[in-house]
Length: 306
Image 1 (tube, helix red, strand yellow):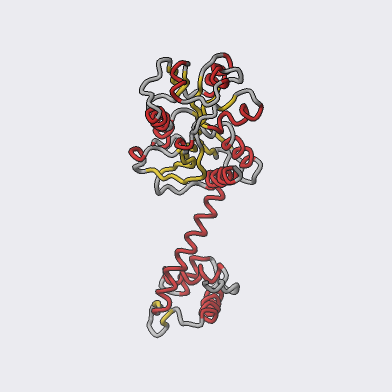
Image 2 (tube, rainbow, N blue to C red):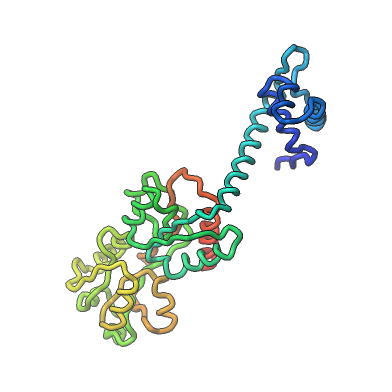
């Protein structure tokens, strides 16, 4: 474990050291810093005493760094630059135009994202939040174009992950949601083959969970759903399922509250094979701003409590 930083090292020591090296002498450094030459000389002497090594070679007409000074320069310069960047980021975060733009797939727009946004807005970095919903291709296109900062939901297919980074938070299965009076609930052991007799709400082609739905149906010997309704609208899916003997292929979290209240019921069919990774997709290598990082932290917290 690295030793803690000596608390005797102050910001004035680093600025005096860096400016003296940059200007090639104490007098020029003092003028640039608006300090007296004795003040700069004192800071340099204190720093060398704290580090217990000579930083400058004073045997020549123009001050030059010793080997110790050259080594320290790399780290001192990086430290001061990082500190300056932090100050600038904090200044920007206080601006009235700060906004975090979130893409929320249907999987998370009912529970995780609303809870995370509420937590973020209750914190010290609260700012304007824009939430965009829609299918995965739409949100990923916005992410790549810089229109949104992150996408929350199921992991994109490997074929579209070039240039993107995914952070896995938890996994979730699909359910087959029906209204409480659905005929299939009267069967002792309903099967996926029985779904063919009813209208089915499924994600459209291109949606992240579409391959999972197709794989489940093919494994059950179902090659086609005669009365298929493609939708990514949770409002339409809920309304249609409550009013008709339809079967809704949907992520569990989307209808969790409906299932808990008994408004909808999950058919007792094994859906373990439909488990998918839920998480945060961002541009690879992109450093999030302070507010965006706070939103991501809130999303992680909400996901951890599931």
